[in-house]
Picture 1 (spheres, helix red, strand yellow):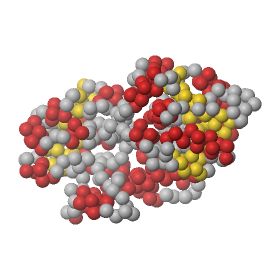
Picture 2: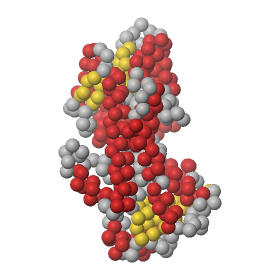
Picture 3: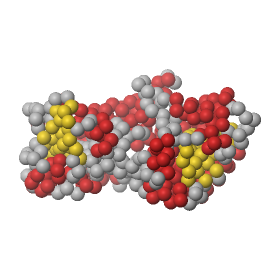
Length: 436
């Protein structure tokens, strides 16, 4: 099928590449000409495992194209997927301006009947508005229907999550739209759950917010474990055998980040309030996560007289392994506080350091300084204190002796519970983690 994808971020690009991989003829549209040239050369603008290989494969095969000419791309498409961003507004609501821009462009360009598929995460009822908006600006006498098809990919595993999804959620308001979207996804051989548009929109928020709740609950329990002498990892192990609970998302740490959980919890909270309802569970998750991000810094502040002039190793900057995304990453808030306190931060991240440099260039910032190194060992060399914010494999594989031998003062604050408590103690490392 001839498909166009609007937007080449995590959602749009991964969706377009995977649709091409199963045999569709896909054109990806982006406003940035330099970005289009980069993608045509086989280079991905985002870090995502396995993505560049599929980009090159399908581009060479002639199934994948990139362009800034949205008019030509939309004109004869059988289906147009919208995968642009819906960033968070100051009040927690979703900014739908990019959705509106693309919708208007589609309305003014399409010259054949087509299905518009909204993959972006949008508030319940948005697809109804998108369909009406397109009708308001439609130039040619064609039939355009809108379907909701929320994404459930996780950054770092987005390609796998799309090609091997647990299910595809499709929300439609007609049998024709349902059948067309079903045909698009049939080559994947994955179960399809068909509902109406508003239910599809709510499923996305309900899933993400439930996982955010689970993470915040475990972090809350971890904090209590520290006070009563229990070990959160033992508690999580015991919980994981209960089929009603499951084993996933039971790891305690310094909070969730990224492009989905923080934004989606706030958006659902805003939607509830707008409709005169208070989602107390979601409010609690947001509050717990906000406080949890500062947990390590607070522990270290109780231990230290000052951070002024202390070499501070920071291991991991991305909000999770497998991505260069810094959105809502705990490292951002903590590094800012460390710099304000006069720390000399030396940071390591195998992928996200480049993006972090854009926010914090090397040199003096606030009362402190920041520099970047290529290995974790370099960051630890002669360090007075170390913070672990991301559990990259390069960080996981460090042994307790590496901290002991390289650091001036082997003092480690681990926000991801990477290392064994007893092994660190036996090696002579003063070690603090979450809930243990």
